[in-house]
Length: 303
Ligand SMILES: C[C@@](CO)(OP(=O)(O)O)[C@H](O)COP(=O)(O)OP(=O)(O)OC[C@H]1O[C@@H](n2ccc(N)nc2=O)[C@H](O)[C@@H]1O
Ligand SMILES: Nc1ncnc2c1ncn2[C@@H]1O[C@H](COP(=O)(O)OP(=O)(O)O)[C@@H](O)[C@H]1O
Image (tube, rainbow, N blue to C red; front, side, top):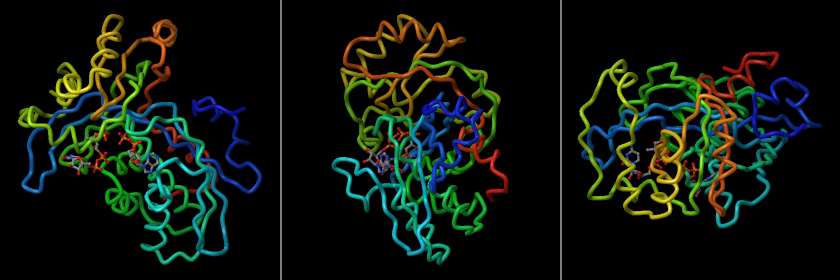
């Protein structure tokens, strides 16, 4: 059984290993809300954002090597291996720990890139967590997150593994338990650069900071949404269409948008009507990352 919905696979533990290769999920995330509180002197923006994981994503299949080579297959078009976050994460872990082992890594990719659902960051986090286990390098999850944050702002949340409100530039986490809704996620046919959105002159940058309790009880919105809707007609069209059926928002800096539902069937009914040429998937939110649910079933401890 091969599925990119991980929690179904969790009931078949034989999937932990296939031949010599260990298998690890690399889930997506949504930003259920995202507020920009401030712009720091170094150009980075201070955020308050609610991360929840999705029961959907890529698989990494990893086998060990006796030499220190990192092999990655298949090639992602237009992305040299040295720039792939999986390769960079593996190299950074070797460098940090002095480990002399290597790995052959196969990436089974389904998550759209540049979509605001964190695929690249999640791949990096899964690589760090999995190799730290397979190489027995024994770093703590905080030490892994320290390596991860240098690769991308969202890597630490995927190592942390609990739905959280992140603050600062994403380094402070407050665990929380938002409703685990069903989502229809749609990807308009464009890729959006995070840097381009953060440098847009019309972006609101001074939303007042709120307490965790206030944030969870107020309406959820995304401060990037207006600028992205105005700049990318594809996002505007897709979001306007979704809003006819359910409460819907942008995730991260886009391009993906999501609508929320109380049950799977309602999400599937709207999925079945989606405009042609727009890809998407129906998925459940998870407050515990599927990666962590997966490794908790392994016989020995990961961190
Ligand atoms: C804002 C989020 C929310 O999840 O957007 P998405 O990427 O998921 O859409 C992420 O934290 C993004 O993470 P990531 O995509 O890794 O961003 P980075 O590579 O660290 O930063 C890309 C660029 O965006 C800007 N940037 C990013 C994060 C931040 N808090 N303030 C910023 O100003 C900076 O100009 C930076 O050079
Ligand atoms: N393993 C990887 N998977 C996806 N993207 C990667 C990977 N390694 C590097 N990247 C680069 O990171 C960029 C952002 O990827 P991703 O995390 O999927 O999007 P986002 O941050 O918008 O959610 C991609 O456009 C790609 O250039």
